[in-house]
Amino acid sequence: MQTNRKILDEVRDVIRLLHYSIHTERTYCDWIKRYILFHQMKSRGDLADG
Image 1 (cartoon, rainbow, N blue to C red):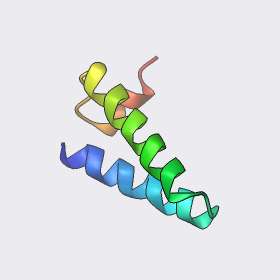
Image 2 (cartoon, rainbow, N blue to C red):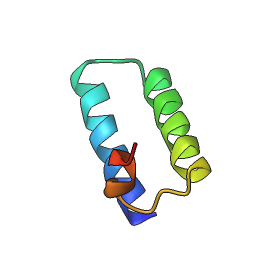
Image 3 (cartoon, rainbow, N blue to C red):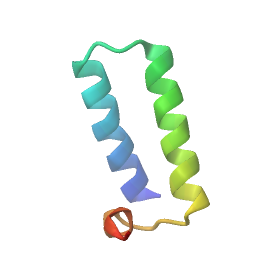
């Protein structure tokens, strides 16, 4: 889950840079976590596989 944490940190940074609501941030991060867990992704490279 180490990689997931880094990805979510980057997502949070971008969301905050764009001044999105904290509720939007939480929702987006929750959906990203669910997506990663559902597809059993272990690394960033798994995101690139099509």
